[in-house]
Length: 120
Image (cartoon, helix red, strand yellow):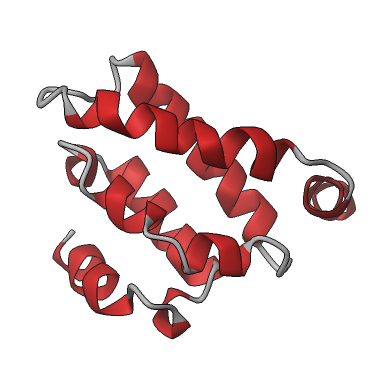
């Protein structure tokens, strides 16, 4: 819808929340998620990661601003390595959408991400 488009454009061009808060937040919570072999939807960090992925999907849909930053870093690869993440269809869906939105096939991690997502 038009409102969704305006929100995406605002987050991408007029706000610094994604690059200043959300991307660093993912890097900060990954160690806690890696240290918890039983993490899943009941864990607050897992829920927060899901919310961040949802935001990334929104801000990368038809907007190029964050695509290179998300595609060319190893963040998606690291997220795929979170224990149990590939056991939850909602997380797989978000990861696939994000990977498609950032055009991961043209990025440096395509050889790792493609088989990981296919195996899910």
